[in-house]
Amino acid sequence: MPGTSQVPSVSTLQPPHDEGAHQGGHPAKDHYRVVVLGAARVGKTAIVHQFLYDEFPVDYFATVEEFHTGEYEVNGASLTLDIVDTSGSYPFPAMRLLAISTADAFILVYAIDDPESFEEARRIRDQIVELEVGQGTRGRGRQQVRLAHRHAPREA
Image (cartoon, rainbow, N blue to C red; front, side, top):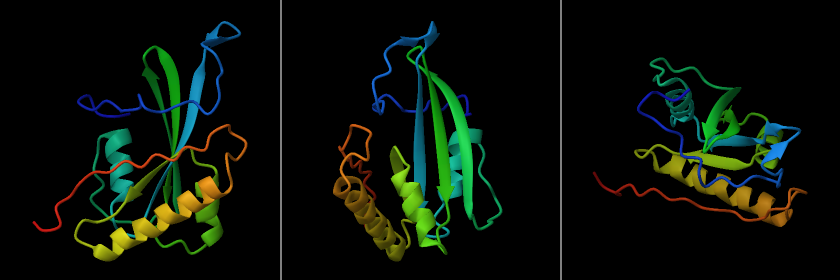
């Protein structure tokens, strides 16, 4: 769960389908899968742990694939986030394709001091766009791909 000073910003998420406000007398529960992708050793696991557990892992251990779940209440509605922390080395390309094909949202991570990791993030983004837009809506009634940018100066 995010630390007390952190509030997850999920107000821009759109449900994959309209379930209405209530089902069977229970509040509607939205469920999203967020996949964290990037090169090895760029801080993907650290970001996930900071968001979910308000902690920073000091020791580095290579991630194969880790699955985390967080439950939140946003504007009175329940929200479940499944967060998939992927491997940066991708020894099995099918794992990356599966992660992309089952995701509702993506977080692409790169190291600001490693230009190659930025290029890897670009390659992953291109692969996501190709798979998401190229295959249409994947049966979920959506095709929109949103790109969010956060600026980092090229020189410090």
